[in-house]
Amino acid sequence: MQWQQKIPYLLNHPIGISFANGTGTSGVLCDASERTLYVLEYLYHLQFAIKQYDYATIQDIHGFPPCQNPQRY
Image (cartoon, rainbow, N blue to C red; front, side, top):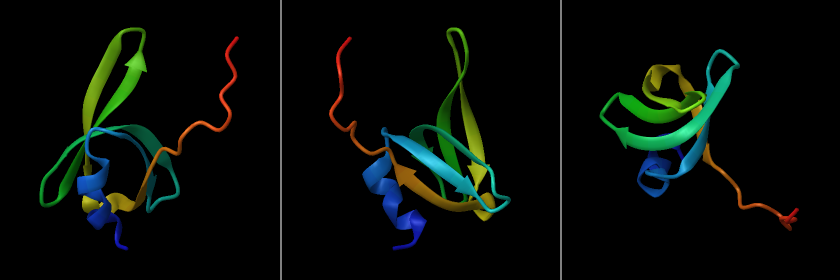
């Protein structure tokens, strides 16, 4: 499945993004247009920003997996 086909299933969910240059980022997938993903990312303290990523820079996207055996402290 091409990563673009995952978009409808991942909207409003946390995702990881792999870029073609070998780097990556994560955040909540807020929206998508024909050529751009809009991702809400944490910056610092109480600051968040919606960042835009062009499809040409993206290699793949993945939804976050569920926590395995979460322990409460």
